[in-house]
Image 1: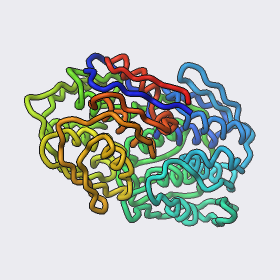
Image 2 (image 1 turned 45 degrees about the vertical axis):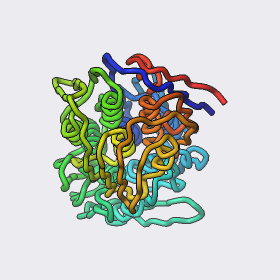
Image 3 (image 1 turned 90 degrees about the horizontal axis):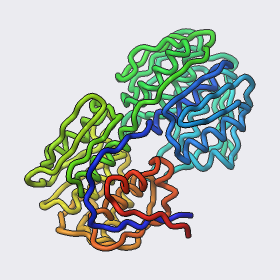
Length: 419
């Protein structure tokens, strides 16, 4: 197990290339199960979650090759039961249910693991499968779905805290091979859902409305192989924008999609930073003053919950009182206790963090509780006096490709130490 040592006080400057989106790549890789023909997916990030997904696909019988960010998958013959030992490590492994159900009309998958950030049930996924005609059984830690045939239906996937991205992905993948037309109301609008839909369309699916709250899917008899390039990772990009805001003298992100990041760049501009967007690039520079913010995390196109922890790290040293509310995962504030160990002044009131900005944080040993909290602690360490020791960095390797190397290339001083 590794830990990261962040030597604070270094200034960041230069250019960083953003990787392909983890949250797009995982369901797109799973979607290759929908055809017996070869699929070629490029710009796949080198992450532990991706490794787990490719291992699952191999265990299911797929032929998988990976080289320089390009993954080739041929799922000519597949098993319908995913092994627990791998599935338990990653929540997104649940997205193999949809394509297996669509193609084989049955699937058995262990209840997924992943980050501990509050209640994240898959009941909306299962509700969608049932609406398509599948029988669902949860027993001994496994989810089994079975359908003699799948029939198009009208399905509402909006839950207590908004739409479900993986649920939308899962139901969409099952419905592309269903008989008739499926309408998903309350669909997630995230760019990653659009990216998956575009891949499915390239495979021969008939989908309209991806990126809106209503997706219409006309089922087809079969899909064929396709090639696809994964979109840029907007959360990795947002994380580097916040890193540059915390201690940057001018940082440019390349291979990004600026329109996907408006919910991050607009608050940063309100906080006093100079943001310049161009074709596939964004530059952030310090402004004359930094201002406190009021932020509310909502499903896309709102401010992303996956950026909440990183913004807390920035606002912890921003003069004034900032208020951050997470309406998606109200319990997702375990990073707050660790930031307070570094000297942050933060008070939690239910789903809201009230942040009194301090002049400086101090390095301290801290413990990462989940993927985005890991990133937030690294970012806080960039600004802190002394050395910040971030433990359990296996979380960060789930979603950030070489974050320490990329930050070091911008001027940071970060060591990765094996313990």
